[in-house]
Length: 376
Image (cartoon, rainbow, N blue to C red; front, side):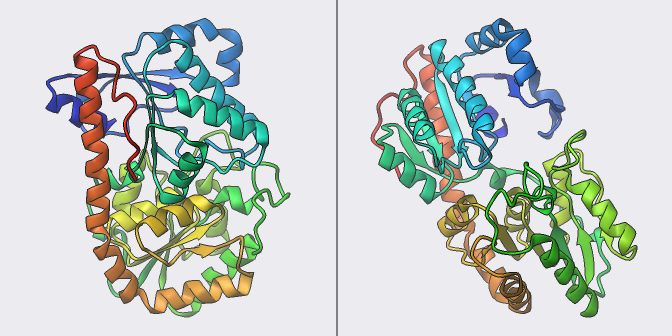
């Protein structure tokens, strides 16, 4: 929203936003009075009860920016979620309103039907932005014409450094423990993501070793939906603090800006929620992302940051050893985090330029962007 707003205002347009998606407050951007924002829920229930309202809302827009929940344009989370994502795109395309897929992970698609329908919809979209080189390779393979590789938009998120969150005499290590992985995925203890590590054992051992080293441990929940305990990092962190009362528990953040500001005050960060690790990385904190899908490796390879620990390759013990080794070598990680700034700025600038071009097209009543040559 912030990037779209900035691009529109550069072209003399004052945008109004309609947020169509999962329920939640529209209070994430700073200066919220500047953002005229309406929220329309897009769920199975609303699709059954009021599909015409959803359709008319989509049709009333000048453009649809579909971010696909960042990583949900895939079938690794199950066919139900992919069908919902495809349905929303199909509704947008049927209205003839320009559909732009904002920077996101594309794929993987394990099913043949998911791959074919997804490719067909992207080919009909006005523009498709990938947030990493592996997703862009999928677009190339699918021969999606209007494609471009940029970066995850969370790198643009502002923050205020919070050094008061920690004891300056100790090394402050932030741990983002994913409730989703802790519970085995959406299907319970089924190891839905095919991990080769015991994630619960890994987190317990990591906390134990950090304790033995005398570090200050901050548990930093990052996905905190109310009413979904299997996804709620905060509820899990509370249980861990009950077992070890000396652990520091970050607050239940009201939005990602608060989360990033808190993380910015730490010395080191380990996380299994990708946007928690992006918050650390883009706030200048050396970080070890714990990957359960290729969205992690794709993004960080694009930044030339080779410190992702792959939970689908390592053993529990080797994953722990790698994390601790990177903690010991955190100065090198810090150097690489700092060096990536130019890549991030270039990729964000490319997206902003594309948005400005889109705004020009909308203002002139032209077909936005059009059949451009793909940019990598």
